[in-house]
Length: 127
Image 1: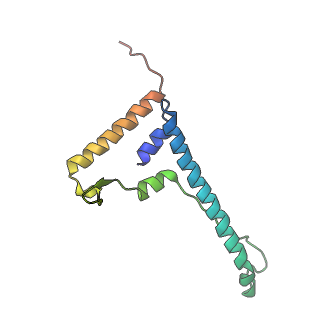
Image 2: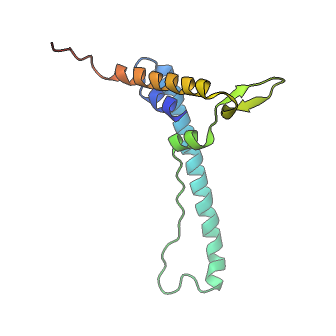
């Protein structure tokens, strides 16, 4: 899925795909900021309790948190391709044969190659 996301971000011919990919990127950045702000607020609220135990001592190292999400890794590690089964069940990719899985992979790679080749100016062949 991360291959489709990357190719959608750079697709010069379909602005709708780019817009969808940019919206996903923006939504993840918004969640990242909200988590970052929330964690830092929570950490700051704990500092008076830390002081009871002598923290920070003579010098204050200034505790803070950093939250980062990588959209590509989120898609790679947390998005699965599933197949429709019967009665509304979805089946994992591994339930299909190796040939079908390879075919899907090849088609996605061809799509990625096709989209990336549109980015480069056409080169003239020298004979």
